[in-house]
Amino acid sequence: MTEDDTPLRGRWIAMAALLVAGFMNLIDVTIVNVAIPSLQAAFDATDSQIEWVVAAYILSFALFLLPAGRLGDVVGRRRMFVIGVTVFTIASALCGLAPGIGSLVAARVLQGIGGAMMTPQTLALVPALFPPRERGAAFALFGLSAGLASVTGPVLGGFLIGADIAGLDWRPIFLVNIPVGVIAVLGAMRYVPKIPGDAALRLDLVGMALAGTGLMLLLFPLIEGRQLGWPAWIFAMMAAALPMGVAFVLWQRRQARNGAPQLIPASLLANADYVTGSALATLLFAGIPGFFLVFAIFLQVGFGLTPLESGITTMPFSLGVLGASALSGRLGTRWPRLRITAGAILLVIGMTALGLVLPEAGGALSRMAFIAPLGIAGLGLGTAVSPLFQTVLANVADRDTGAGSGALQSFQQVGGALGVAVMGQIFFGMLRGGGDYPEAMAAALWFNAAAFVAVALLVWRLPEPRLVPDTGQEADPTPAE
Image (cartoon, rainbow, N blue to C red; front, side):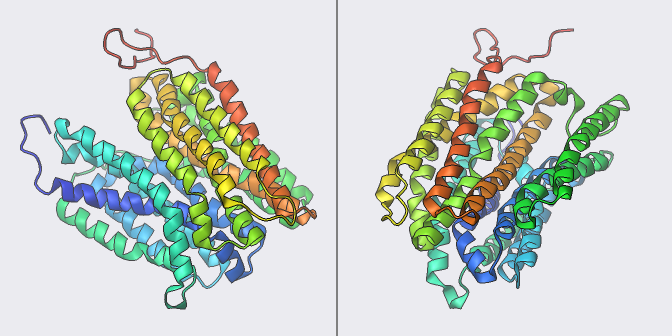
């Protein structure tokens, strides 16, 4: 669509359908964190089983995010979006009706696949809906909806569980997605233009299998090892993750030599700056989902807060992220490494301060004492995220930007899954070893702080983004041939 083209009728209704679906996906992540103690009590689930409720979604989302973007090119963006929302909605119904913890985890895997199928299509459909002069406003709405989801999720989840609608306890947090998903599908079918795909494109199925196997070899032992008593085969699984990772890299290089599809382009894997940046993103996001999982259990099981009280308690973090993200947008591409460092330091300060205000064993819990530490930590995350993505992608050649962006989001999700596994191991291990809830929470917070210190130090190994003179635009880092 060009500047002279007539804007598409119903484009803002189509945009609303995309935003509703994205909002549903984002809010589901935060809602589940508040519901974790209720789920554990309802199913009498083990610690590792309850970790899988979170990790299964993150892992399936991360693994399918990259191929789902390419699959949208193959079958058409609108079709892929509609299929993704449909899968997510059906999976939400299966979650809400799950008779046991095993079926819930399986439904969460399906939810993650649906989320991965629809997420890459939302941003990709904007150019088909809007002329260039309106795209800035359209893209800004995605950021606004993400911020609103992070703030709304914990409170909405707590309200739905506390209301105990029709005696369903936690189940409405998933069932509420059904009407939302139906609305999104109908809106997309009616107002989003049908864009044909390219059936000649192919997927790297072997790369997917190698990546998925490697991740499972690492995550399964971390989550289940404590429950199984750390037998020797668990350590053998973890050791096998390394050669599987090497096999994945070698396969990507083989695919590149043969001109065949690659899950992650070999040129990205050979880009030391991109690999370092992806490792930083993995570290940064390792501290977030795991923190909210154990913090919800700390508040609700350790100190008897209701799900709604727990959700409200965590709101300062979300508000901090929202405020810092707005400020980060105004700063644009200025001082990226300094901003990442400042954000990581704020996260360290917030997590350390939170550890210092935890009550003593048997002491009373002061929710007011958590406001400042959580707000500072939220400001840190919101400050660091945008410049981190800018800095990493600025060191990627133009031809790899799309793949690099998708892979970076996958590394972000992988970091979340790893964080859930490691923080769960620390938190539940402390409780099983005779520690109390404040001690277990403090130990998990020190892991978080250490991860963020590593981010603050390692970011200086990345070069500053090189800007084209007089334009303020990031330069293509590929040397001229």
